[in-house]
Image 1 (cartoon, rainbow, N blue to C red):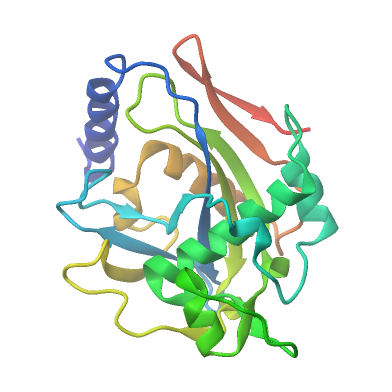
Image 2 (tube, rainbow, N blue to C red):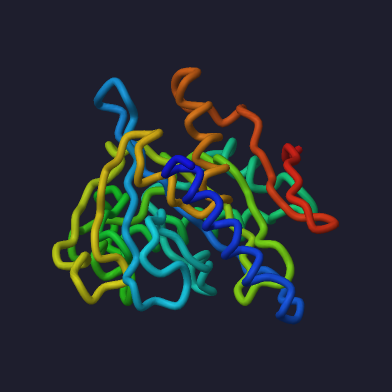
Length: 249
C-alpha cells in the first residue's frame, strides 16, 4: 500500500471511530482560507501543522480556519465582498443573508491572521476601532479586505461527530497578504509550523478526507486558468450515511 493510500485508510478508520456515538449537534458556521502561491509553474498552498496535544486533528496539516464569531459582521472593512462572492454564499437552502455572507468572509480572514500571522488587508484612510483579534490590523493601519476571496466549496460535517461545522472554503492569492505578524507560529502554538507545499505533494496526502476533496476542487479550477466566481461551487454533505456532492445553485 502506498503512503497516500495508507493515509487515506487511516483517516477513514478515524472517521468511523469518531462517528455514531454522540447526540445530534447542529453544525456551526465556520470558514477556512486556502492561500495559493501561483508564482511558479506548480501552484503551492499554505498549510499549518497542528500541535500534537490539541483535541481536534492533532498533528495534522490543516488550512487556517474556525468558527464565525458574533462580532465578525460588525468589523469595518477596506472594501466590501464582491457581489459575485455574496451571490455564491447566498446559494443553497436556507439562503445566507448579506450580513452572514460578510461574517463568513471576515471570519476566514480573521482566522488566517490569528493562526498564521498573515493578514489580508488594505491601508485605511479612516481610522477605525479594531481590537482583540483585529489588533494586528490596527497596528499596521489596515482594515480587513475580503474583495480578493473566492468561494471554492461548502461542506457540512456528518451527524454523530463531537464537533460539527457548516464550513465555507475560501481561497485567495498569496499576493493579497499585506502584513505579517511575527511570533504566531511556535512550539506551543495551535500551529507549530507553516509550509508552502506544491499541489499533489506528500504533506497533502495526510489531510482530512473532506479537506482533500476541497483541495481537488481547487486544483481543478487552477488548471483551467484564473479563478472565477462563476465556476460551479460544490456542496459536500451526508445523507443516509453517505457523502453527497451537489452543486450549489
